[in-house]
Length: 111
Image (cartoon, rainbow, N blue to C red):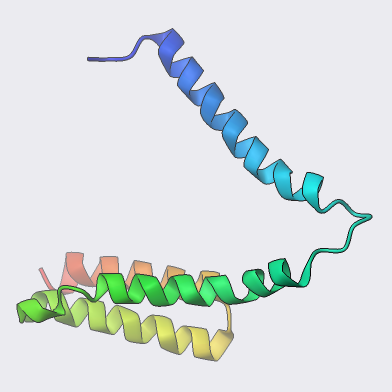
């Protein structure tokens, strides 16, 4: 069932308001005059690495299939992500290299 124009506009507006509110919330809560709590700073430091670890475990869950065309591109992408992160210490770059590398491998090398 296709959406009408009004329904589409309402969905986009609700998504925009929710996105704006989530971006505004930290500034309203921790304005320029307030010091950010140490716990929040700690979470900001530790969560990116923890999330990458969880993603690696999740993406590696089907290594038990034994199919080299499934295992090899994932292993290569994980290794590339780890090496780039150890070399540059840039989370966004590491994720981009791993994701782009994996997509290139599964589409052009391990078909």
